[in-house]
Image 1: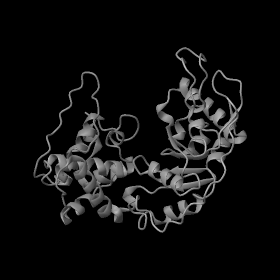
Image 2 (image 1 turned 180 degrees about the horizontal axis):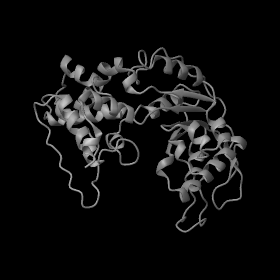
Image 3 (image 1 turned 30 degrees about the vertical axis):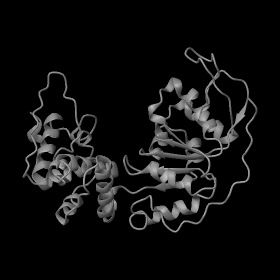
Image 4 (image 1 turned 120 degrees about the vertical axis):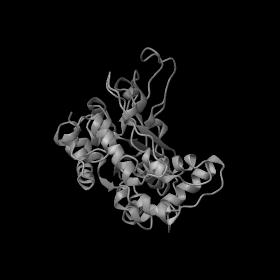
Length: 342
């Protein structure tokens, strides 16, 4: 296969006065979008930092679509979803017969993203060996397919994202420091939804409209009480959690109304009980308040975790909230973890 050449004749991106595809671009995300506007026209690597469900992929797409590479492909790779023994094949491709099951030549993600943008989502999940090989490609711009001997080049702009603390991972020796410097030339911190609740009305309205259109039901309307209810929630799952709650509320209301209280009452994550453990869960009460529903879920999580708050299997992990947030809410509700130890 001949060495690939750098594409030419790119057109500069057209100036964009707004971001119609991103809700909150002119309010809670205004500073973030200003950063994207500045870095998008360059080829500088971008590292998007943010919690799960906060919209990192949407931001990566905005970087690509405002760049000179917007006519090229945007290739997304979830690093945490690739088995370690297949990482090289997925990223760099393989030749026919390179290993058992390689019945045909395969182009890797770098080749597929040639002339465009490669988005490495959850880059913190890359195993150490893959980090070494990725660093080499980013430094030298060359790679070989698995089982091949020809040096290939791919003209790719890298955008990476993670919900983890890469700095801490570097300190612990879990992520290469030299790779960290290479990918974090321009870091962008995406704020969680709880820090931009001013965007909630617009976000919720948009999600209600898309949910109704997807399910073919009449357009529903959010009341002031609905918005106040949403505003009192911390949204540990961010926009993804909000979208799930809105869709669940529409389904529970059979497309005639939004049952947000019931939808939020069912919002605790599903946790498989330990072997031999019997877990009793309360049915959501149609007229219960949000605080009552939250209290039942916290009590249920504490009961399953036997009073433990932090760590693997703790109540905070089961509820997908920060342990400090959970303790504060427990104090407000008058819940004592020690009563669940038995």
